[in-house]
Length: 248
Ligand SMILES: [Fe+2]
Image (cartoon, rainbow, N blue to C red; front, side, top):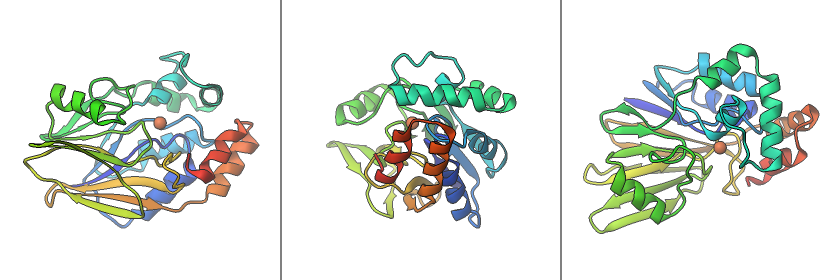
């Protein structure tokens, strides 16, 4: 089975459209979406509609923390000012059917194959950030899964559990491949499509071939200036436009 794995679109339609265009001639049996469809960007309706209607094969989508605040399932008390302003802006502009879709997104973790799980933050807590080896250690000891795809940090990264301990890696560059060892366990993060934070402003996504066991990280260029222009024109906080060009 060929998997396409997308995370943290954050209402950035220009970035998601570029990724979907880039993969349009590839065949995927399963598409996994790891949450944060909306919040920050100026194209939330286009992003939600593409996730609802344009993905191929079996599709699994879970919610992120921004989706919950936009859907008013949570109040966003822990959000910074631009994030909260963007969530409120998004709630007001989502079409009713799209807002309902976001509100009804399931919570992670979800099992999507015998050996594959997805979550937004951590499989132990959908809102938790997995940055450190200790974060990964807690998951590997409390959640028994061979492969977990997660998002939320916006950093393309991997944690590997093997006999000698845990290895961590930050994935940089245009593409990187890893062949999964059946004797090891993995936490794998594609990075963010709509708001990368690893100082590489290109949209990030993953593909996975469950036959060859190869996971591939990808980065692609998109029209950042258009996404920025829309944010500014929409009256969203300007800092949300500025950070896109820096990848922070
Ligand atoms: Fe996010």
